[in-house]
Length: 246
Image (cartoon, rainbow, N blue to C red):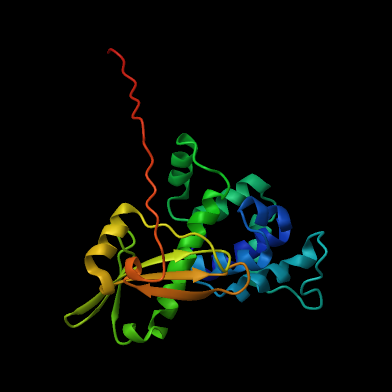
């Protein structure tokens, strides 16, 4: 059973080694670097660890990389190879998603039933968001205003922000967004927008960029009154119900 961060990192490395580009593309990633960065951070591991595990398994699969062919495989990696290397692509892909992405199966059902845009896979979108949140946890104290503040994770509370930072009577609400590239579009939900409007300079929009190469961040206090220009987008939704007699 996959339990620890190391277990997950090893299995991701095995998956990427065995299925190579087919594996990265199925998850929506354009390169191994993007996969290492997003998947690594999303499970709380160093991206370099995923690369090292992929390289360790490479000599056992017919890809163009030589990997760590000059040394014997570590026993605990060999155990994972013996147990999981025969999994077919679909089974292994679903296994990886199950422990990398919380509630992935539910989100996938919702997106398929609602016919949402498939330009970005559900897996990549969820993993990028999770990776951005983990990046923030590791780096939030590099923001001077957040020094000596205690961090509370509010991502599961649906309160309009991802983290609350507190220090005595002072606080900040922080909403975290992630982008694979160095630029792109960031959206706020109506709830997030209203919280930002209410708390102004106590609301921080923290954006993690460039997962495709090397992630870094930018942040905006009182984002609605910053250099960012938000455009309101309204969509009219027709509610359709289906009834039957019982």
